[in-house]
Length: 407
Image (cartoon, rainbow, N blue to C red; front, side):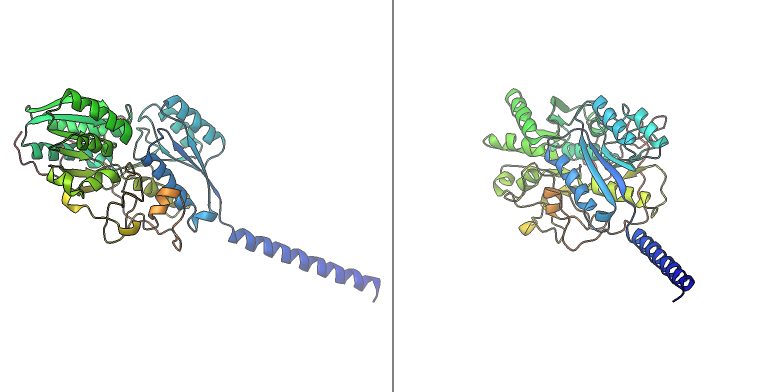
């Protein structure tokens, strides 16, 4: 072979090799989806509810195809707004694509959120809300848990009686909205007397302690309106011998099990279980991913998650912990009594199982399912999800309860 032919052969081989390498690189690039840097920012922590929301998000991030698309980092900043502001600043500096968060204040975080938005960060707030208009708020609180629970209690008491109010974490939009809605109802009934109002901090142990103290001071109480922590409220009431009273609470498993307790029912326990679904966090995370990946064209807005509403006679046990046939409470030996039972939604979160909420692991054999195209927009609520806005005249309209007692 001549030297010229040899060089020509080498040149052709080199071109072929380079072409093959380029093709392989392109194929590999196409096979590898974009990796999104997502931060999970929690403020208040320490109760089952917050752990469940984090676990639900973690389980979704590990579910195909998100398992190859999401780089998720969790940060817990506590109840000091300044600490969460600092956490946001660090996330923005780290070039976050998205921040999914339970904000500790509806207003204190606005400036840093606005700065993050200007740098392309998507902020998705779940359950609790902010008034900064560049953030997405996904919450059930505008669906009216506070006022509907209050009206149900008024109905059961015939419009008169002494009551306790067990509130949540001070300063949060969730506590403010629940309380404002409840007071809108209670103020219409002058024979309803609020004899004790205390903060249970959405914790069943603190709520039990504070309720027990209130019962000592007011043993003749007729009913209780409670935010999260109501399993502890129930325990404090049940510890007293004799007659029990109506309790309007959220969806702690121990509370719901109380309505399946024949002794409690015979002693007069009644009420409803509503509010605070940890599932809201999963719904918000899926919306975030659909926006980031371009599958959904959605400008920042306020989105309403449906309000859970389970009456005493609608409690249904999830046998063996499997979520089937519309069951809504788990066996007591499978979860803590402070566990929040609203972890699943057949349309929004079919990927979620009990282990998802307990351990943060994906459900075997599942893949991420697309969300319905339509969303339910939440109404404007000044100081809750918007700043310079006007509340609707029927802001506290009842959606689950019909008054049976005239104001």
